[in-house]
Image (cartoon, chains in turn brown, yellow):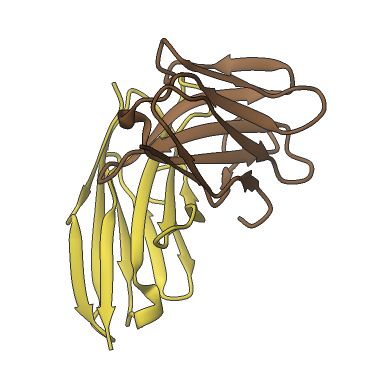
Length: 115
Length: 111
């Protein structure tokens, strides 16, 4: 899974600041997924994107969270006005195909700490 | 709503002591069941995908099986390097490509 690149690996933000998490998918992959792992909890789906399209954002909190995957450059998960409850590990995964079986390959995650 | 329950939450084994991890799931239509391994501070590492009841897949000391209600990850003669959290996830037919994960089984293999 080293092919999916996430940065930064660790991010510290004060309450009220903005957090930007970046994800570059594996070469040849055009589908990106973001998951959040809260302390002592399982991975939870947030959003699924293709280039310039949000396909499924059913797991995204209604406020303060947004995601994009532009034609050029990495996918960005943006959290505005962060609160302590946003502290978590955020994982990005990518796959080459939308349909069926393709396993998603995960990055190493960004660990966000809100102080 | 899709549900995935893994048991036990934690498992300690002696090196060479074989065992099984369980993943029970409830989905309206299963597209695929996935097993991942996650080491502390790292992202999930893909192990297997299973698609239909009766299917089995093997990789080194690991073997995954699938029924209509659950999947098992069998670990034969484990080694300390098999220590990790094992995650099970389901992909449901009408929910696109997203995965619903269980909370994982934390496996520790003592030398």
